[in-house]
Length: 197
Image (tube, rainbow, N blue to C red):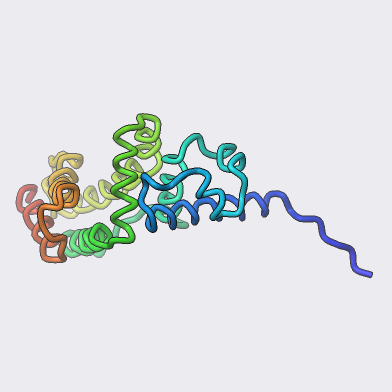
């Protein structure tokens, strides 16, 4: 007679955590941030509200973690480094523009941005867990370009990133123009001209 195996609480917790994160992402995409509630997330995930509140202090924190989960890779964040800075940045910017133009991505990220503006603790978590590591990966690629003579050696890398990304964020935020591969390429070309060696 075989013995019944006891459930592993760690595996059950991880399964519940993933279900909550998947439910949060799905609900934001389906009904929008304003209509998502902890109750709805719990119901969709098949867990109790107390499970959610044990792990997250707010709806914004759950939704942030659901998107953070998508960005996690085994090796962390890395930008391509083929030796051709312009080609590498165009690859990255085209992918970024495509994400921002995708309605499945756009609606929840727009909602998350609103929550970050209103919640200082969430803004801190965003900078620490997502924006900071991503910006550091971008700057590492720019440092490689400086060493290769493809970017001014004295360029302020924070400013380079702002010149590259701020117009995209403004166009996306204000819906002031199309987000196209051509637009992405133009941003790269202008930035590289501004910070040429």
